[in-house]
Image (tube, rainbow over all chains, first blue to last red; front, side):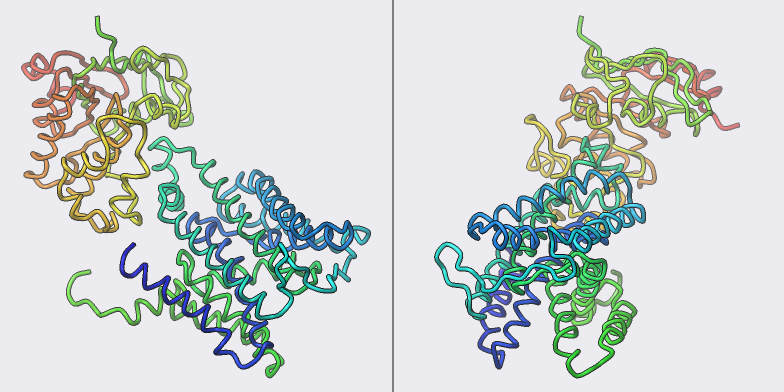
Length: 315
Length: 234
């Protein structure tokens, strides 16, 4: 591991450990937990966008669907969480494989529209199929159940679970990026034909990336329902997909820190600032416009370039 | 009798409705270097694209060491041991030098990353650098190294000397000669006649999509008429 690599992990761990001590109350720690759950979703989406160059507007499917699956099986079928969690993750991942087959028929705008349409189909089903999903009322879980005998009902204990999950996600995605598969995926982003010339089936590379993104999105989905103890059609909606996309673009696609930073900023604007400012959606839009005009590649790469020692001469 | 490394028999190829290759036949013998010459637009790159499976040959047959590959997908053709060093290098500029090599690695054989770095020491010095920041000559070395990483039985090179400084061209020539000495079968497309003639065992000359001449390199080199007619500038 390079020095810069180890510094990243040290800073990230320090940040996650210090956060509960730095925040004034459980209310704020709860918001931090929401942000980190969405950070995992944004990281999973960035596998598609930053690594694979596939911009999806339907990634909320992998947040909402596993959330529904976990909530429904625990609430209506009385499954223990130890069974409901793997089932929900498996279901989300399986659906991502199916949706990958459908959306990877197109590239660019076509891909974006198919993912959007599939997302809207899932949202429509959640909204209208009242018998299964409770419609607009959603499904509520009264208390956060213990998992494997571990009590995670308090805000602090659940924060630890989410922070650990985020670290595992970061490590896995970091390894993916550095693996030969990651290099292939980034190669197909700009030069699919060259990758084909080397004997790779470009479609399979994209398919695997899509399913990997669906898997980590599903983990975010399970954490989401354990976090809010509630799931409604809005978790599957287009605004939720757009928000995840915004997190990636704002923080910086193709970086590990970017989606996390983007998720934190957007969650803070949404929850903290919105209690003081009525038009927080306008504020979100304004922040986005300013960042992409000043730093088109996102905050993290933008700030890095800002603070990097200025090189003289060529390059 | 040794099996030929690559044979094309009566290949026709089309871009849409335009007929680009007319009954092209050629034979690359095992362990030899066949130079494919011709003016711009003669069909040299099209021939390579057809072997790679990007263009489907309509009639005709293509075989690699006796095995039919006509009509297979590009990835299946690479799996049969065909590798291409494309025209204009076509490396992955945003990937590092190391990653450019990793993505091409395939099978066990003589070539791995260490051996590529031994052959091209400059690449080892720059292995963590983005490939797009290499010089033209270094990118050509990388493109050759990348093709070798797949441990090919047939190596096709599309104008490896294009746009390079004379001393780099000479170095590329030495490397190609070394690969041929090792027994690799090479199909070389070149505009640089001297370079091609110095390396080739046999020569095929294409003119407007047809084979105009085929023969031993020394014989072709002596035949000034054939060269003027098919390669000369009017």
